[in-house]
Image (cartoon, rainbow, N blue to C red; front, side, top):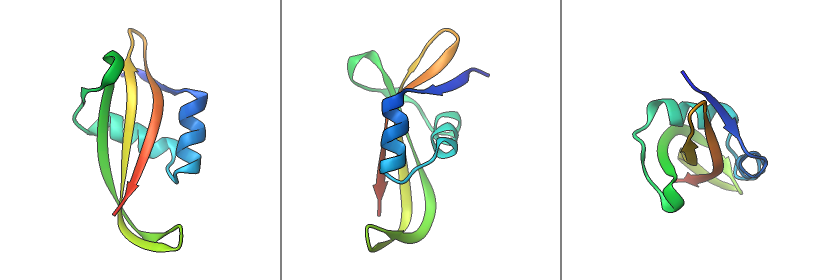
Length: 84
């Protein structure tokens, strides 16, 4: 199993958007991979949430990772988080 490494940009985005490295790793390991821009890959995974985010209640949090499948690692370029 390849190591998953997050860029500095991805780490700053996941923190500011309310996600964790564990959720990103779970998404990459469990969700279906699809093509993305610039020869990268993407995946999405929904997680039960049931909390407030920016003073609004949400039941689900979806984590979307944009990454590269390199020879020796999976390199995460950025992370998006959606609440609904």
